[in-house]
Image 1 (cartoon, rainbow, N blue to C red):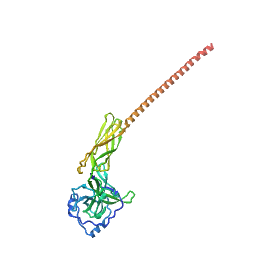
Image 2: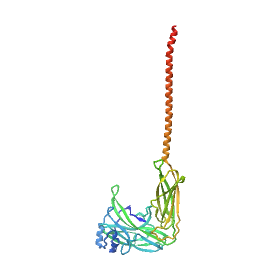
Image 3: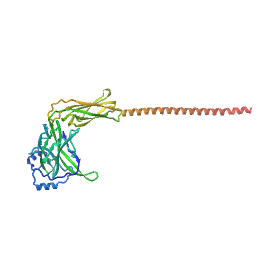
Length: 398
């Protein structure tokens, strides 16, 4: 899995009075040369005091550093993480970590171990916030002088190697435990209201340990949900979003592959082309929210979202001789063809309007014809009345 720096805000960290270790050896330079030069030296006490006094909070983007698994003689460039397999409860492990300051200035680093908090859909390992105390493997780690957290001032282009010990408790549960060895730097910047705030940026190396004992491997698909997005085109296709939680209910790290589809009436079925066919590594007791999208679905009413997951052992994990059962689930959603309904409503409304207009025109025509007939009748009566009046007068004279 991948590890990316994380950020948080906290109060400024004190540099403390710790001196640079004398184990700054030229072998460390050779091991990290591929990533950039770093001069290694063992400064005098006076030089260390001057270096500590010169340290100020840098601005984000001005510092470059690395955290690398190491031996007492130098960093191990080919070692991507601290990995310990088949460790018995009560064991004690000794190891080393190198912190390389690639910057052109002296920097104060805070070094400590913590627990992993989970992974993301992009397979990025996440860790507890710096202010939260670890309770698992992160709490088993002790740095020099038995401290859980230390501050170290490293001159420009210099690497320092720090030893640490892991004391596995006798009560450690079987299975996989995941954490990280972290080196952080505090940055000063302006907040939204103009006040100065301290931002903590971290780089971590994963710590993975498998404790001996009964192992269980199982993934579970939970909380499936689906939503449908309509298109304006009444005869066009819509899109569906299917989300679910992939939970590790066993005690070993697991990954897998997924198959997500949406089915509907009349034999409608669309397989979602997942952006991430390979699922992220899920830590024991943790879950990852997976969200996938698809198009080409006509809103034909009731639909069903189907999820099928095939578990697998991560490629960089120790061999796992356990049966892995497939898992899955489904959820219902309803796709209303609003565009088509709107079109039908508009057509129906238009039809009713045309019918009413036709009726109104007929009524107007009927009233007009009636008015014309009435006017003709009145005109006829007047004409007949005017023609009969002279005849009556002539009869009177006679």
